[in-house]
Every structure is written in C-alpha cells, then in structure tokens.
Length: 398
Image 1: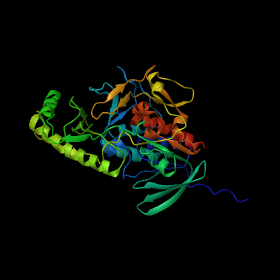
Image 2: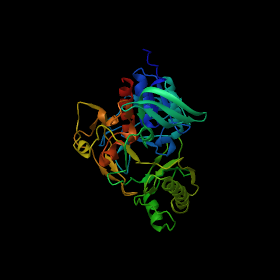
Image 3: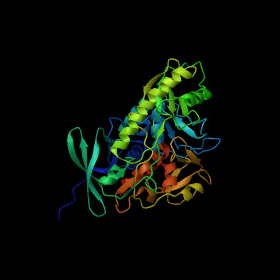
Image 4: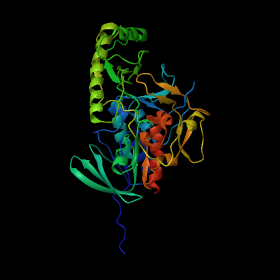
C-alpha cells in the first residue's frame, strides 16, 4: 500500500484581513506550515482596503479600557509600535467605545513584517477559485493568480475572506444577510487633508452644513459623523456616508462604489465652503473599496446568539472573547448599539469557527457562526484577530 502523499501545507488561509492574519499567526505559532492567500496587493482587510482606520473589539466597553483580545493580535500591535503608532486605547467621543487608531500604510508594512517573521508564506494578487473535496474534507484548492492557476493541497483550511468565498466554492450552504435576506448598510470612510490644525473641528458647523446641503447625496448621519485624526499625518478620518445594499450583485456593489465617490467629493466641497478650518481641505483618499459590513454567512456547527452576548455567557469551550457591543446598521447612518452583558464579554466557542459538514474547514472574522444580532458584534477587526488566532491553532492540530 502506497503512503499518502504529503500535503503542500498544513494550513491554507483564505483572506488577509484581521481574521486571516490572526489565523495564519495562530497556525504558525502552533508549528504549522502556513500559506495565506489575499486578493489585493496588500494585507489588512477593511483597515487598508476600505479606510476603516480603527481596530474595534480589542477592549470592553466601559469607563476604562479592559483588554479582551491578545495572542496573535499583540504581535501585530508590537510591530505597529515599532513603526511609530502608539496603539493606545482611544475613547470615541461619539460612541464611547474604546478603539485603536490606525494609519493604513503602517498597517500594510507591519503585517508584511510580522507574517514574514513567523514563517508564513503569503501570496498576494491571488484568489481561491475552486476546491476539491470528499464528503467530509477539503483536499485542495485551486489558486488563481498572476501566473495562472495552481492547485495547492493542505491538511486544513481557514475561510477568512469575509464574504465566505472559500466556503462558497467548497459547497458549504450560505445564508445571505439576516434571516430575511437583508444586509447591513455599507460605509465609505474618507481621509481629508489640508485642514487648519489650529482650528478645532466644529461639529455643529458640520451638522448645519448638511442641513443646508442640496446635493444628490444627503447623509443619513445627523450628528456630523465619526471623525478622528489619522495618527502621524494630520489628516482627518471621517465616516459620514452610509448606503443601503439591496443584494450581493455586481450591479449593486458598482452603484454603491460610484455613490461613495460622488458623495466624498461633495462632502469635502461642503466642508471647504461651510466649516471653519477647512478652507483648504482636499480629499486624500477613498477606498480602495466601500466598507462591507455583511454578505454571506456559511453554515457553522454553532451560531453565537443574541442571548449569548446579551447575558455575557461564558463557556468552558470558549476560544475567544466577543466584547464589542452589538452594532446594528440595518438602517443606514443610524447605528443601534446593544452592550454585551455580564462581565462585558461573551465566550465564542470553537464550534462557531467550524464548518458544518466539513471536518477540516474553519472560519475566522466575519464568516464565523452568529445569528444576525450577535453578528453585529463579532464582525469587528479586534474580534476577528481573536477568532482567527483560535481557528488557526485548531486547524494546525488537525
């Protein structure tokens, strides 16, 4: 009887956002040979491809920052500190949640470095196009990259794509949006330069400007939006535009992308003409893409529930913590926050990270099992690092 051929890798991770990086580092720390595949030319997920310049979920909600996420995520924060970011908890004046402010170029470089230091192979500009499987296991995936198509085998796989792309090609049943098929709204944060640093940002002036705005893209946010300073740049980071997403069609995404760019240019002109200190403001960057809060949910062995979070349920089989409040964006521009109960965090069990019906497929980040209200908590990047770390370690042990 011939010996079973050795796999190319122990673990293949699809997606290079917070969940994917956490999974790759978790698996590598456990001694696995790891390949990470990312469709963009850089890592970071929403932090670098959608201007979401805040790591949410690292800390519990409350008057003091109590850390809920460590492990692989700490390796990333340490690398960011070496690049000049202080990574200190920042209390958002509009939400009173604790976040870590980011600068996207530092994030890109930090992730490159930390994965290289930990021996993770990374293929950028590469997607998973197909999967070969038996009834219970994925055997290999087909990578589509700049040099064509290549088949790679592995013992285990982690879907950290956010949109469940690996699960989709592997035949895992997926739910779209909530139980009625409705999707949370997209966002489109922007970076703005040229603001006079000697003039404080006048939130009331921003609100008044939008009340008088007669353009095509009125904002659903009536409070002036969420804004901070991008570390080490003097730029303003501003989340003011939200947009409904009716379905996952390319047409819907294309319309949302165009709307976000049009709105960004309108909004900067509005600041220039109406808000003190912005007379010389200019748009530094949109995107590269809109911020996607929700798409597909692959079937997991356990779905984290609203009750789990509302009661702060703690379990012996927990492998990660969910501490970010349930932040529901069902209505564009009008987020509803529901705090995590109990001690301020809830356990995420391993079965929420395991695919139903496939023994060697794990989930990380937005793809983990969660009902619609619990999903509004677990989708953030800090929690994604934690679920990724746990998924990678579990995958390495298969």
